Image 1: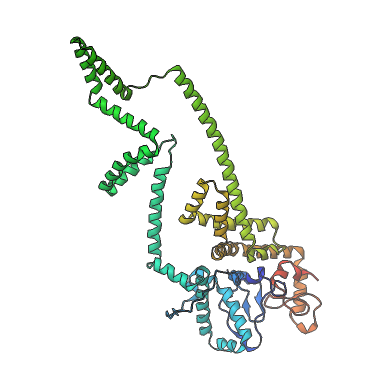
Image 2: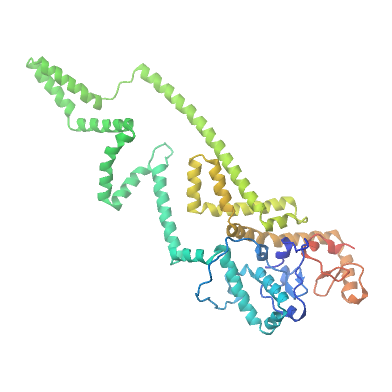
Length: 475
């Protein structure tokens, strides 16, 4: 159901929220292929051009989509294949209202064009279909050079993008295996990571492991000594070195060789430094307890700081997102509609915000930047990234359009229901019956014609906004 969006939220030049009256003369007969169909949704019609009120896409007619392309149009052949509107891609069909409005403006500027379209409606249909595709392309690619660059990077289109996303997902899984701890605080993913190395390239993996012992003591000597000490101890035990030294000491003692015994005992003590577990003294236990308590206190403080940081991040992000949405012209128009409750307006804004936020969470490049700034504890950078993402016109247009397409028809229906409840139906029908049959009687109040269109006593049709405010039910 496509109807009455453009004039619902976008004011005319005089500040009113009216319905485009179309053009006059012969040009008024030009077909409007973008106004949508009638049915339940055709609450307001365009009396001048005989068309339905424009679709939601007209909300975005004047929205900036990016820098203008200063380069001349290249000589590539434009695809002029005709499409049936019923099967036209939805992302293109959304621009019907905007294109229809532009065509009517052209007809006003050049009335003879209306005669051509009236005589050849198939030409108008093809013309508007081409304009819709152009509008859809420009919302996502404001310049030809940008579109060409993307095509060069991804010559196979979606297939190349899917392949890239698959590679990114693989890299993210590697990062997770390397960085994340399990519930017990261990890096359980490291073993799988090393196994994958060997499966990928055995020789390169061996070379990497050979290089690690050379760099490790330079980077962290304490952990190197601890791990390598355990390796030395395990090697000495597996080779039976402590037992062999003990046997040599006994032989040297039996042969009355005190100097040799002294040297062997010294060597045995050295090996036990690697093989025997350290005997924990009372002082060691006390220090261990204090260290555990200190670590626990630090963990609590760190957890509290992380929670505060996360809460601040979420609040800042929501503020940046809401500010960007409120600055959009379609939302500014929505805020001026008095018949829509404030709570409903806020609900619509929140739906838009959540829709956009969910889309960003699916963006690997955006989330990579967010994670880096979050791990660095940089609130300013986090706010900057959020602000930058929501400042993209094509991105915000897309989500606002989707939400309003679902919400506005129901708002109009609710407004009509409220207006019907304010005034008895018999009174409205009586005035409509008295005034719709003969306009020459100069009606004293609002009246409705046989097509269901409401007019003022002066003969001027009511605008969508006036109908939503219930002005057509007032005397």
